[in-house]
Structure formats: structure tokens, C-alpha cells
Length: 473
Image (cartoon, one colour):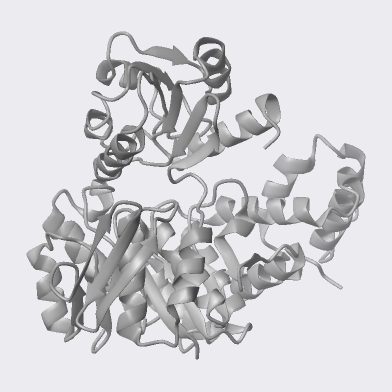
């Protein structure tokens, strides 16, 4: 049996294997070369499995590395290639109810609460989200659980590659197709798709949704989406389809969204017009044309994400009871979103990586600190170089007393020299998140607050550092 049969004759893959494995099993690999035949890939795979003790999780990681190796970095000129592959894979007409979620911020939180409420209400649900914090498995969930069997993912990868041939695609496009194949075979009631970037040219947009959600529209990814809210609104509204219901959580809707909505003949369900919400003490209230939902508990995710989730579910008129909503609001949690990981000292992690997100983070911190006095806030900041760093930092400058900054363990991290020009002169640089956290823990008092923010990468590195070195969480 050929484990990698579809790659026979693919010399890019052979080169990749050489680079990765030659140092570990030179003699076995040489033997394989000497006995080269059409079975070469099979022999290489046997060698790999022998030296890694049949560790299937390592095998999956090598597959993912290979996919990154063969994928193009930027393929956002159109999605006709993805549509073509999806058609060949017969996944364009999935029978499940499709909800596609776009927006600058809050997509992940909205998807998480949608999933939780639907599951608690008895529906079967698939959820596709990105990016992941630690592991590829985080991206695809069936009924609230990750698919931990590596061989399932690998078989899906093989199927996609068998129809791709010479078609170029990006890593995200490939993984999106993999998720859709898994969902199609799972016979689900509802599939929730989190848009990766924008909407119009995103790989998730190959599937026509029954409901489209736009959480908000802010300035981010301006090199890919445009440098104005008008242009970004146009890209995000690219998920609209004829006669589809669209739920919008943006107060100031760009005119481009209305233009696309009129062209697509969609029904808009907008905050402040068709629905709204407000907070009162320790509860919040949602209301729309069908009435008011009272005394809802404050969730651990943003209230704006919770509200647009309720709005979306009510407009669909699904069989969902208030007790299921309350139960889900109490339990929903998303790592890296105002994530309190330790109490003394207080450590909060937030993946806020643009001005829109840090403005909301500022509001959360102000509300959180209202009842606390004499707290000193230490900010640990790491961000990707392509972001609007100046405006991302600006929203938190008055709250943070002591600034620390660091380089991230990724090729496109903002460097020490870039951050030094933007942050206060008193800011201290450390070469890694782990090193910075260690230094912070020597200086802060138990009543103080450490805020780690700037990217999903900085949050992931902080969680790893805190768990492995300082605390057993």
C-alpha cells in the first residue's frame, strides 16, 4: 500500500523530506536512494514511521509542514481556483445550514457562542475557525470536540491533493477545503465558518451561507483589504448572497455595505435599527421587534459578540430556549480574549492586534478596574510588523504604567527597533515573551496587573511560558 502514493514523482516533496530527515537517519535514507523505484515515497514513509515510533501526531505535523512548503504565500487575486477544487471535491452543496461570520474583531467569540448555544439546544454543529493558538486541531470542531485522529486529517489532505494537480493555492485555502470535506461527511445540522480575511476573496466564501454575520468593520489588514472603511466594508460584505439574511453589529455602517446589500437583495438586520442591547448593573438586556430578553448574565467574551449572536439566532427563529442561552453565556470561553490566566498577580491575556480591538480592550480594562484601587498595570507587547502599531498602542498608553516589549517567535514579528520608535522611552525590551514574563514576575506586587497583548502569537507564547515555568494551570 502506498502511504504517500499520490506524491510519486513529486520531487518537491522528495526534497522536502531530504531536508527534514537526512540528519536523523542518513543510512536508511541512503539505502532508500540506492533502491530508488516507483516505491520511493513508500520507503521514505516507512523510514519516517520507524524512527518516530509510529507517532501519528508527528506524521500530521510533517504533513502540515509539507502543505506549507508547497502552498503559495499570497493567492488573494480570486477564489475561482478554490471554487474549482471544491466543485471537483463535490462540497459546494453541503446540506447543512451554513452560518458565515466576517468582521474585523469578535469573529471568534461570536462563533464560539453560536456553537455553544446551538449545541446546548440539541443541534449537531461543525465549527471552523482560525488562527489556532497551539495546535492545528483547534481549527476544526465537530459537536464541540476536536478531531484528534491524525489519520482522518491526512486522508483528507490526500484527497485534496489528488484533485489539485498543478493548481496553486494558499495554506488557508487548503485547510478550509479540508474542513469542508470533514463537515460534509459528518451530516451536521449547522456549520459555522469563521472568515479568515475580509470575505469576498476568502476561501470560506466558496460556500453559500443561509445567514451571514458581520460583527464590525474597522481598519486592519489594510494592505490586503484597502485603507478605508468603505473599501474594507466592500470586502467583508462579499459574503452576502441573494436573499440571504445578514446580521450586522457595526454602528456606523459604510455606504459600500449598503451598495452590496442592495445589489444582492439581502435583508439587513442591523444594530440600533432592527435590534439592540444594553447593560444594567450585573446583567444585560437584548431587544428586537419580537420583544425583549431580560436579565442575561455577563459572559466572559465581549458583550457585543454575545449580542450579535443572540440577534442572529432570533432572526433565524430556531427552537432555542432562554435557559439554553443563559447556560451558554455562563459557560462560553475563548482563550486569549480578556483571558484571566492568573490572579496574584493578575495576568490578563488579550490577542488585540489593531486599534479597533485595543479600544475595546481599553473599555474592558476601565470597567474591570473600577472597583480596584492602587493597581499598577504592566504591559507586555509583541505584535506583527504589518500591523498599524502606532494606533494599536495609542489606545492603552494612558492606562499602562510600565511598558515591556518583545520580539515574537515568528518571521514577521515587529523588531526591537520598530517598537522602540513607537513606545515610551522608558519601555524595556526583552528578546522573548518567556524572558519578559520572568523579569516581570520579579518586579510586580501581588496586587498588580500584567497585560499581555498585541497578537495571537504573543498570547500563545505567554500561556506556554506561564504554564511550563511558573504555574501549574
